[in-house]
Amino acid sequence: MIAFLPTLRRRWGGGLLCLLILLAALLTACNSGTGSSEHPANAAKAAAKVDPSTADTVLAPPVITDKVDRDQSPLSELKVLPRKTEVIYACIKIEGDLDDRFNVKWYHNGKHLANLDNEMVLSDFALTGWISFPIANEQPWTPGTYDVEVYYMDKLAGVTTFTIK
Image 1 (cartoon, one colour):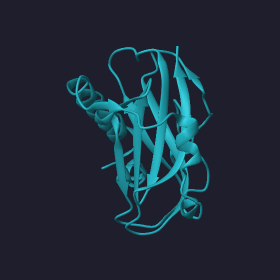
Image 2 (cartoon, one colour; image 1 turned 90 degrees about the vertical axis):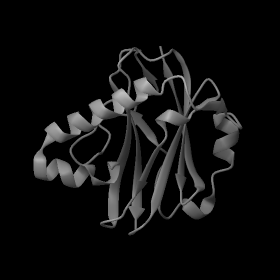
Image 3 (cartoon, rainbow, N blue to C red; image 1 turned 120 degrees about the vertical axis):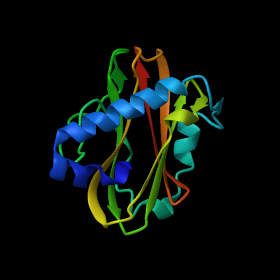
């Protein structure tokens, strides 16, 4: 569903994006107590395990932000976000081909938040540019350290960390 956001935004404007974000927030709230497991490694160890074969497709480490433009480019890079941030985006710059698959896994203080994980498959088009993976929460975010792992075709392609205060 996320793979179609740039196309849908051009056809139907931002109203549909707001509806999709609201739906994601509701699903997150419904699943908030499920799907967590221990993070296999901290962000520094995970970053050391980034598969170099992904560098031609994932062009830069993930960027965390609270706002993206209409082409899904991050408007800023944030390392600290307030608890009341409505939507958090993990953005990655790619040079993707048809049928490329990207996954994002989210961790809080070392525990996997499987209910927040996102997947995108470039099923209709190849893309060079930014793609974003939004997460939303109706309640203030739990303070702490969050790690984000980006996978390309099931290979670790990038890692970043941010803090909620």
